[in-house]
Image (cartoon, rainbow, N blue to C red; front, side, top):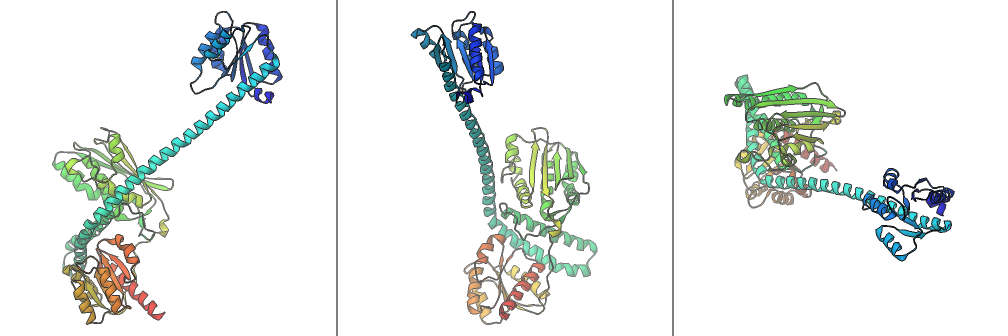
Length: 535
């Protein structure tokens, strides 16, 4: 057993008698010590200790130049506070006072000369056992400390992510009511624009038709913006529409779209902003073009606001590995580390009363939904770079809006909405496809009309005074269980869980609604009703 312990150890012998040093060396060599360092000059003890880092020191007390007490003082100052390094004192002085003084000075054990080799070996073994146990414990503590630090870092990162997500969730919930009212307004803008388009295409110039196309496109983009306000915290749905998007082409379009802001109005104020771009061909990604265009527009506008005295904006796309990246950088005022860490939070802004604190939060939500990441590099007074990485997912699997067959017969449809203008708009859509419609502006009127007529389908708004849409649907199902009911809601996706658990609703359709949405919805519910009837 002593041999197993001693064979792993490095030992330092300090004794002014050469014979004592040689004796100890020979005893230790019998036990195959890993390394034995001996010296008769106590002045070299410290340098040898620092050079070889022994596991145990065998030290004489009565020596010229530096006695054993002086050497122990030097060693104690050199030994780390969390280390255990035993010193075994070997001396011919057998007085009790010397022994007490040596142990008080830092010696872990004490032997008197002449030495008994067997006792020396056993004492060394005991001290080395404690030394190696301490080293093992110290390594375990260090490993555990490292694990705890990593766990705390991960926990801190997770907490930060959860806090950010909860802030986004709170914003999404708060924005739900606002989104409902916006969606009603967008329904009218989009709806009447689409109804007007065929007439303009026949009677108006291409310029006027182009104006209307721009209005419809703007309403469609606004629909996505409202949706993002409500759905900051929502992950991408598995069935969310994704099409092949070329980020370089999208960046060109965003630069053109934002030119009036960074080029026209700024130059009119005497401020020169130069926008440079490097947009090589990159692989397409699976994405939502309207959302990604909103991201680039927000970042370019942010860059403009960050350069009140002018400067340079650079927009660069690249293909790195399995990712497409796009960087928007400016030479503006930059951000502090605190501002950089918080700039993606909802309502955080450095623009004072001129900022809402929503732009970058919207950007963050959109990139998260695309499975991407945002890196922000900024320094106060030295500009900012937003680097966006989006993975090249299976674009071939991404599908765009799919056309579906129209219903091949004229349906009798009851349309219910407390906003009469929206009820009339939906009815006009349906009439244009050859269907017969009746309208009602509240649930009581709707039940009365339904009871005195024959209808193939009911389309009802959800948010109405008195009886809401879901309650109306339940009442209609009690009268005619076979009649499908489509629920319209400005709250969109937030109603999905409620509608999916309500047997009275056959389909949820979010506002704003367009002709294609209605056409698909009608085909879906009537096909399902026919399959159910056949079964």
